[in-house]
Image (cartoon, rainbow, N blue to C red; front, side, top):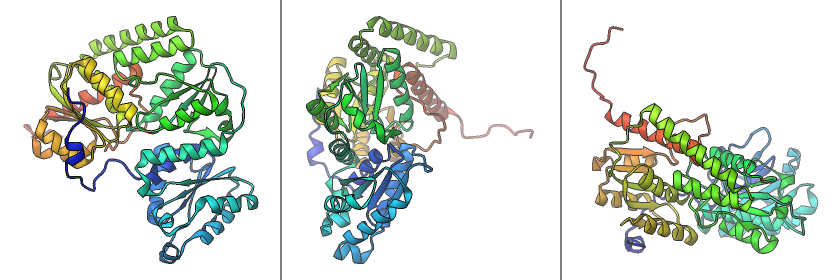
Length: 446
């Protein structure tokens, strides 16, 4: 087993990363707070990242506001702190309870101090100011998410709080590549409710400002990302004694991962019998549904495959592909890889007995080159891989992670048993599209 690809450190890198910059990640976290205002201290171009984050969080434009200082040449050269102060004063008209101030590269390079400005301005306004130093050069979007989580926890979650038995704080549900991650979050909340969780807080998605201080009262935390949020969970453990659930487990994609996940939650809440019934009913439903719908799995049997995804989706996908779909994965390219996530991946590869090449922190160039050398029959990835591997004549590219070129109105989870069926549906449709003739062999009568 190869535990670390030697090419990762030496291969030439390009300027086509999968991940956006820290400003985008911080905006994703901030916009998950319901009814807040997010102020980008940036040029107008960087402000487009905030708009993109607004769409990813599915924020309600009637409740959540975004502003920008729209820095121009003069402010970039001489500093824009006065403009920032003026914009904060003007934000009073919006009557938002909370204002996040996010700094971009330009003002941080010239020396603007958003933290000092917010400290000076706090007495002038009747809403809470939360500055986040998240210039793009400080890291990628996952680093930016951690920066925003840190600012929220240190600014808004303070003091002692009486523990609520059985309560859970869900952390970083949005920090993953599932284009309909809202479905995963909804599934987790349903499972927690059925297993006896008394109260659920979310950090962050559609999170009321009033709920943020209550996070300290949670008994447990549940991280929904292998890409960001571990620092926030560790902070909650160190400062408030909040115990992390399902740590070091892949997320519940596929039979085995879902079984392990539900069993862990069932043991925690003292409802192992309920978890066992959920597993039995769910597995039976998947098998029966696939049999009735006529799942055609013959083309998957022992087919060589590669995964190009974020760690959150990519790591649990490995076992789902190997055990449930009976494919053989020889390459895993992860867009990011925290040390804790890499440990989970290595354990999965060893458990499955795979001889698998791994490239973590992969960019588009590295992924394309590795796929070209491996030449799998199937690639699990995004719309980027669909175009990147056209020259290699690879039969199938199953697009399951963001970015996708498909419009979805329904939030379809990947987690759990319905999630398995959703993934199988995507795979079957992509397979049929690949084999559908593009040539018309008859003259239509209409």
